[in-house]
Image 1: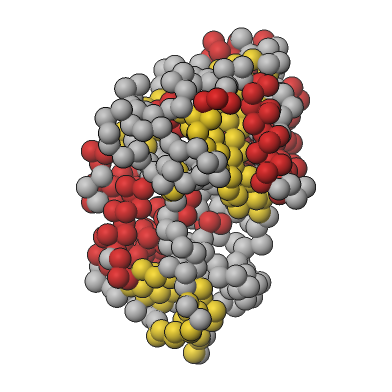
Image 2: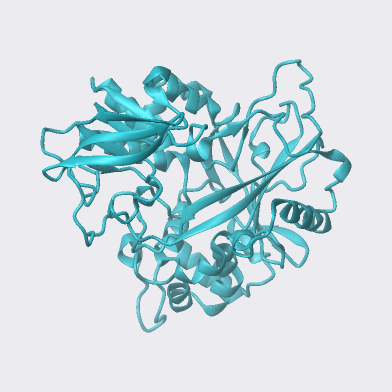
Length: 464
């Protein structure tokens, strides 16, 4: 039997592929929800006594994602093939997204070149430096030295701090007024630890956009629940156990041979041929040789409204002006204008709320006040529900976290053979963690497990 620890997207994808290849698989999820970052809640679940507005058509409202899910991009071939296998290709919709910066009380779009020209914090010369950097052109030394095209490979800059790189290859202003705010909004005080590879992957993504500078994004109109449910059905619900905490990994002669699971007040021991870690069991980090990645715990406030008019036409707004949250994400902008219901917004910080030990009630009060102050169209009378959750994610420093999902560092301790790592530190983090990256990591892990009888250690990337 193959034991999969964690019912996240990477765990479910690994279990699905292994089941396809004839393996006996069991998934043990320590919590009561499946899907990880793609987990959803019923639309009526809320910290507010209000209920979701009924659909005009009378059909049940779709589940709501706990956090904004960046799902897939056109280049995610392995993920698109997986969706085709699951029969979900026709349910995946594509659309361009807009990004913007909130500066001086105004939302400024920053996708197309002409929009950057109108971005107040940057001078014309700084805008030109930013444009060349985002085009992958090294123009340092002009006019004495000819420019270098395709000059940057992100993995070559994994151990270079983003701030140092941008200041040297563009300008101080480009970092302080553009990339600095982007990093601080997502990583808070850990922004100084972020790798230049994050910036370069951000630049690479911009080169893959439409002629209007917008990124194409694939998403499920019915929410990510359709993907999670399809994976669960394909694996087999009888093979998935929730509220099952792994308490022991048994080894013999340096290889895994059993897994002990606690649930319902009792312990169960299962013989295993291999173990896929989609999450690291609590208390096992050091003994498993997990990467010593730095983590940030972000707070995410989901605000559901009944308003027909959105607060902004940008999918993601980065707050450059001072605000208790760093980003506003509006995923309902992607759906059809004829879709029923109001709008949802996700407000996220860089980890400050947790670091300062603020309560959920304090976060809700302060963030809603800030939202109303900065977006005049927000009306509390339109408020339907408010939900708060926390997201633990690695800081993409390029050393302890993965640039492409396949790089690996040597561990300082031995770990058992037959142990395969599909945890978040193995998933692509550049320029942002996405559901497609989690699926890719699970599929890659399954491929490593199903290779010949040669065991692959967790110290090696599962990218064969």
